Image 1 (spheres, rainbow, N blue to C red):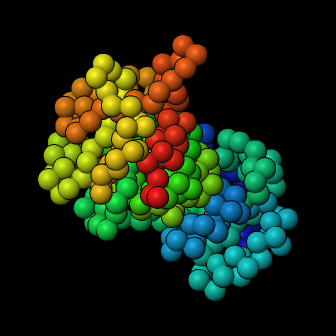
Image 2 (image 1 turned 60 degrees about the vertical axis):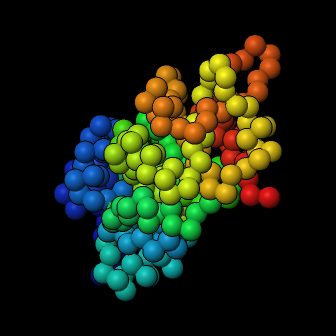
Length: 270
């Protein structure tokens, strides 16, 4: 299969790449079609290294040379490689592709959360965080700070959405993760399995993060809440402890991505 040049931004062969800036549309299409989009050379290579299978590639012409090894492998595997001028790609996707390349990837089947947690000792739950940038940043911190697994609640933003993947620098492919359901009652099952559930939230009587870090449980599950309202009362009711980060300067809390990094660093494996 040779490289296919696209002249018409509405060409049905590149439908996977239409309207990438329309979040609601992409959420529907990508879930229904079992795909996600990887953007930039680093992210694409990390997805492939994780064993994810490409459906097709779309790239500017100069990237056919820069990514020659990927193009050659795609041709051996009969995976279409599409190329187009910058204006055509922008009209197709809705943005300027300055990172040079996109890949439509087959979305892996989600694993049961018990399987993802098997053998783990430190894990994270992201509850209802809807900002894709924050989700990607949390995954990057989880990878860099040695968290074994991440669970996301049913209403949390998709970690495989293009912006989440890009902000994470592709680390969503290296940290095991899946959806956790039913939520939050699944926390009771995890507690029965020996997990200590520490929910980060403000509130009187909360344990300070320093105290938790000084006496770490064998299996620690940190739970982070949405950007505005924080964790739900039902989630807190299913937790072993409510944990807060000591603050100064009249600031009551941090952005959820920043708070996650602080909490993961403080409770890192010694």
